[in-house]
Length: 487
Image (cartoon, rainbow, N blue to C red; front, side):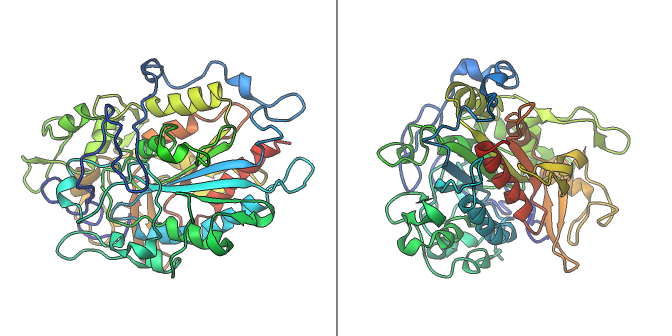
């Protein structure tokens, strides 16, 4: 999102490079196993090909991991009920400064929820928690030429450097680059981070045992969560998530892995764009094919350009719009340009939940309308607004709220050229201005909602257009609490 301006929402344009930055190194491919990110080697995870070809997840056998008759969860034994591995995947593209700043209070609330988890008798469980943070940048050739010196995409690796020690990450590109250092400095005035591990760890009463010097867990989380605004605008949150939980990655091995056998996995993805997890090398070839997924520049009417619309056009099918520009539905599309959605569903649903009997929950803070009501009891899932109010449609002319145009926008044709689809939500700053707009999350939504079961909520989708993310993290904490005590 970010402050509206004529180019503020154009994330990665091959010729113009209006706001896209990425790695100076080529992204890893499925055949590579060498590391490309600071903080540890990266090994690319490829699920079983037969699982990728499965249609839409693991519908069969879901009842095998429901609650037992006594109300206990088979995935929650006496030895691992309190173990939680929490992964934060934070969009670090050029429009995410204000959203990262807004994370601070919500993350503090999340820590309070984790410290306050109780068992079925109301006794504290003294959560044993690992928290790892990564960005949505796994690298992309169209972004490489514009990367800042020394910048390397994390590609799912843990962020280990406090943001106050990498303030250059909070400056964008261009002749007059956007700077949003307050996304870090307002919540991380001095560097705090893990002493030895590439992730935060705490356990015991109120997190009394931790790998953070001085037991400053909250300060460390505030320092590691802000990722900056100089990442590639072809955001790849699903692939970043998969590489982060790759069991062969260095941070998931050894005596103190981030991802632990039997521990609950809680994933948070925060992005204002469509998932653009490119399938290399074929996908990169399609991305430079000007006739397939590129949009026609309305300034020329003939010349196509690669904008963020490529990600939507290459990964989503909406059919034909009706007379008012609204689509009946949009679904993921397997074109060979992006990794198929079942790459991620198969691993989470079939491998982790079904085969490993692992408890997995996901929170998406994404481009959906604000949630207007939640379940008052755990897991505090949305009951009105949000996805239920999401419309897939073309950009509408006229100033917001009657139309979609914000101050500085040109016209719907230019917005369609930039994104390929209308906004899922618009964010107001509460002072008569706007933070920006966000694109609907079709691919990420399918992965998240695919975790849900008839009698279990594993997915919460909340709006990135909110100014306060406390309700979103309350839902995450509710899903975690409900998994410990579903009564």
